[in-house]
Image (cartoon, rainbow, N blue to C red; front, side, top):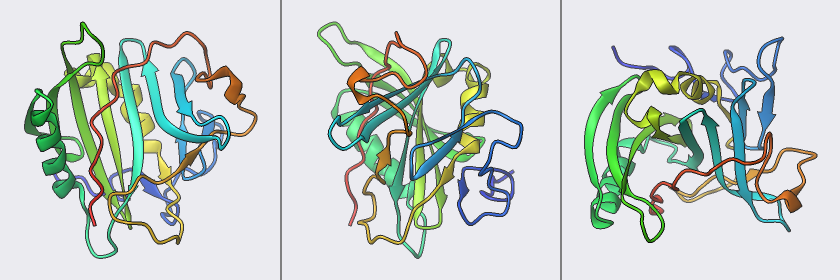
Length: 213
């Protein structure tokens, strides 16, 4: 079965009729400007952001021993980019001394990888890269920890991914450029990282996407 975004589920575009734009009695919606997510109780949410601008450089969610990093990117008007981006990611992971292979998952082709952890004692850690193309954007998720190898361990994180609504806007952006995310209102940037709860041990940051023009 081929996953069809907007028909079989999200991530969603703001123009999709089925987009979950409001809580409607369900899990609370957290807005990062260009990205809105339904985040259930108990899932920890962490950001790294510039204190002066409130712009987010890294968005991570954690559920038990599983983690997920999310980032929307600009894409072309004519076609999706995830297949092309996967080639860039494979090259980046291999160059950094990691291991990577393609696999078929819920959302189509994804990457199962072992990536180099940060730090002197950092070894290889598992990561699962998932991407879904939307209109002029694609959303990348990096599943880490238990969810990198056990889909069942990351069920709630996958539900958050599927709840995502992307607000691309009309601004001209180079294909592959990250879409800017902002801190939710009333978040204290002086607290550095916690949005919902403190004491979150961050997972390793995933490889970056080389901007594609």
